[in-house]
Length: 508
Image (cartoon, helix red, strand yellow):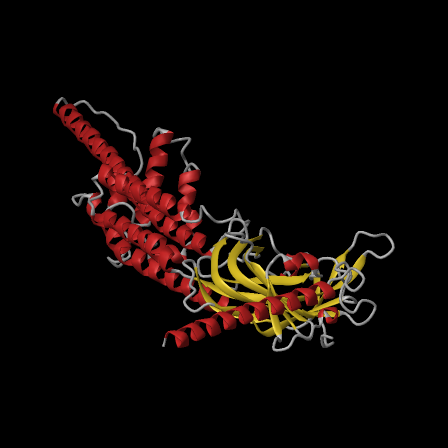
């Protein structure tokens, strides 16, 4: 029994030793193979594959781990991706029994040729290096290499903000060679081109679609006097983004709308409460200014009004119109009261003259009085039949006559004024009263307070302001939803600083 156990232990040790020897021999074979491939007289990493022959085809694809944020002020968007490039380098073919592919570390990349790929519209990108550089290469036995790395990309994206915050953006990503022209290197998408990690979302935008186009050429300036342009091969990806409007609805649209509605409370406040109506109107105007225009502080200072700006302007105009409406009421009310006061003073003066005349008659002393013209009270007698609902409309006979005949009494002295002893001011006052009376601005019955008449303006505004606001808001929504676009006439391809032209030629 003991001898059998010793034999079993010996066999296990022998198998382990043989396995170690075989593994070591296998490793030595791989090392020898790689060293043989990378000998200086066999491989030069400074020369591209198939140098002097057809251009090297580089296929690319990427898998997006995260997308965003999109910074409108900097016209830039950011994403975290796994970026992969594949090409054939037949100088690295190998034959090892049982092995078809080798996975090599980033150190091996320093010894082989790699494409000088860069992002034409990139602004700021970096390779992740924690805990070691996040890149590696797989080498197949037929010389096919796949180079993978993890990158954080920041690329430019031209913003169209005419419809902000109802806008949609199309952000491009252009990939090509920095130094090799289309005669030496051609790019093409591999498979679907761009993949998106499930569950990737953005707070600012909804990811509507991601599209890629095929092989295109880019004409780029070289700065040379002999040949100042060269053609490069590039591939492009487009990210279609639609802005999430929920934040702006809750933070700007709804508050501004409610503030405008609050300004209409002024129509239910008596016109005599000057402090209450004025403070409410001023507060609503300042609130809309602060809240509305503060919502676009993070946007670039564009030279045109956005959709948000127009809505804030509409709200501001309605809040300001409430102030104007009360100013008109207050002015006309005060003017009517002043005119009434003058008429009362005139009536008192006439009463005193009658008393003086009565005393003179008692003393049998004849005194002649100069006719001072029309009695101002006669101007207050209704001369026209009009509808009660047309408080400030012109009467029917004024439409048949020229209104200038009425205004003429205000701007010109009436005939015979030089002969009349009535002062010029009183003549103007008579003409003014006549005009205001004919356009129904002066109360027909002086026993009714003018304030009751002007209160009808508020009653009209209670219906007119909400109806006008709802109508304008509806027109605003229809225009920016179906008719107004946020695209400029410029070619979007100008963002990458090159002229792109689609090629009918298939990648080699």
